[in-house]
Every structure is written in C-alpha cells, then in structure tokens.
Image (cartoon, rainbow, N blue to C red; front, side):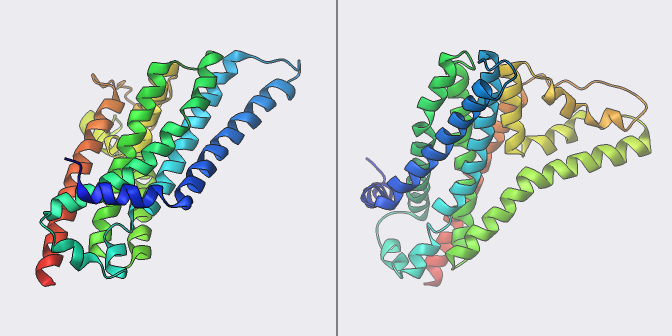
Length: 289
C-alpha cells in the first residue's frame, strides 16, 4: 500500500551517509545555538545568575531559526525531484510504469518531505530542555512542529512544480528560492506599502479582508501568530493595526479566527494546488516523450 516511488526513494536516501550528515549538522547547529544562548544568560548577566523566564526568548529564537533553516533546506531537498530524473535520463523509465503522474509526484513529495520532517523532529529534545525550565509546553512545541511541517510541504510542493517546469535542478532550486523570498519578504513589503498609501490617501485604516489576504500567504506571519498566542505578545496585534499609524482614524482590527489557523489552511491549499499542477505538467512531459 506504500507509494512505490516513496518506498524506493526512502530506501535510497537512508542508505546515503549524506542524509545523516545533513541531519547531524542541522541538529548540531540548533544545539549550539541553544547552548551559547543559555551560557550567555547564565554567565553574561550582571548578577551572574540564571532567570528561567529568559527561556521564553530562547524558545522564540530557536523557533525562528528553525523556520529559516526549513526554508533554506526544503528547496534543496525537493528541487531535483523530477529534473534530477531528467538529468540522469531515468524519467522515461519512471513514466512507463503503471503509476499515474500524480502518484509519481506524490511519491517524490513524500520522500522529500519525510527527510525534512525527520530533521524537525530530531530537534524536539532541544525544545524538551526548554520545557524543563518552563519556557514552553509540549502542546506549544507540537503546534509549532505541525506548522513547520506544513511550511515544508508548501515549499516542497512549489519546488517539485518548478522541477517539472525546468530541466536543470539548479534552475528549479533558484526559482524556488526566489518565490520563497517573495512569499516571505515580498508580501510583507507589499503589506506595509499598502498600509502607507491607503492610510495617507484616505486617512483611515485599510479594510480587514485585503489585509488578511496579504498576511495569510506569508508563512512567517503564521509562525509569529503562534508565538504571540503562546507567549501573550502583542506583536501580531501591532502588525494587524500597522496601517492605523498612517491614518488619522484609529479603527482597531481583530480577526475572529487566529491568523495561524488561516495560514495553515492556506498552506494546505497551496500544497494541493502545486501538486496537481506538477502532476499536470508531468503528464504533458510524458506525452511529448
């Protein structure tokens, strides 16, 4: 019942020492960051003491670091799913099997995602150390982990789609990184500019719907929303009310549903759309062949 492509890719990957080196390097980087941060809190303070309340800041820092690493690793892991088969001239052999193009895409998607998920779960013992000092709880850690997996899936699906569009793996990875920057940074710049222009021109707040649409497609906003809900921070409210600083009429904006839930739903739709587009593209490639 297991997808044959996923089973084959999983066996091949787990036999490769490079994967274990990558996981070890990923865990080592997060661990060293946690150790250095704890050392700074313990020995670099004025009273040379340890305040467990500072573990919340460490939890936020490690979560942001993990999101950045995920966004950097995912395109590299999945960007060569189909283009790599082309470069090795094995795509034709894959297409003559009884598997449908969508099954092949899903198998490639699952194999790439499983390795990244393994990396994310490998860092959970580090977050368990934060729970010991009261920096967070197991529910919060699982909520962030699930959201990270959705982010991996979304950008993994995007990378696979570009892998079907371009014949070279390097090209597909570069385009995935470009769109990652657009979705994470470009949407935030667009949001700020929209708030400035609308607020200065109409002297009132930008309507809620376009504001939520621009923020919902940004994966970093979803992570900020989760952290704010967990820590009680007001950063998310400040982002939602950003355009009120540019207008004369103050109308506080509130979203009835936590923004991270909206972001998660958008990520799920994002995954389905690009997997379907990748399967459609692969079907066209098979017909041309």
